[in-house]
Length: 263
Image (spheres, rainbow, N blue to C red):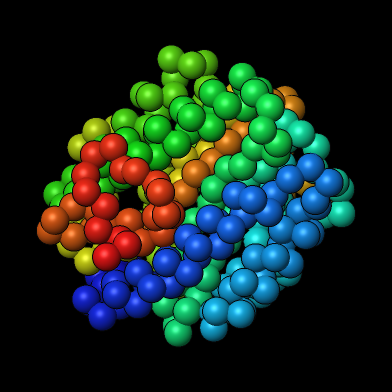
């Protein structure tokens, strides 16, 4: 069942999102060659708790970590490990924050090191563009198919493929709620967006094919062919004035609207 959030709930989720966004901002300089994804997980967990929040993913369906840290061909739900990151690695850091009972959820992609890497740089650029195009469609009266359709159409000319095995979702009171927000879709199809809904949009874009394999830990999803995978995700509320992105980061510029979330 799709829940409609009150103004009070959206405000609380917005505050949670601000904390989450500040942690992603800090990761911009924390992630570097020689660090491990365990280091990232501990860093994120400490920042959440130091600011009065709770790492909402810990214990969710038995998950043990504050973050999902997925590297290179890992699509999502990657377990943090002690393997050191190298220049050129593509790291996706996904986590949820519970602040005073209100949830936020965001994944961001980071390239390790400052050297130019055409394949990684292009994937990051195109995937983030797809996210923003999806956000632009997140308005009252549209349907989730409008979001998936525009994102999929954007990445296809590059030869990329959207994952079919995962999707965005509603958020609150638990991490995964209705409606599902697929990365592909048909315009005019799917659940209708209504004022007060809170959802995530989170395209997972694969370099070579859409197919997935799950590691023996039962969580980590990898591309079946070893190709790279990239993901960006925001939480947003559907409002009469357009999407309110609750997890937007400092310095992030939305191409389609004034950003109200830092006010």
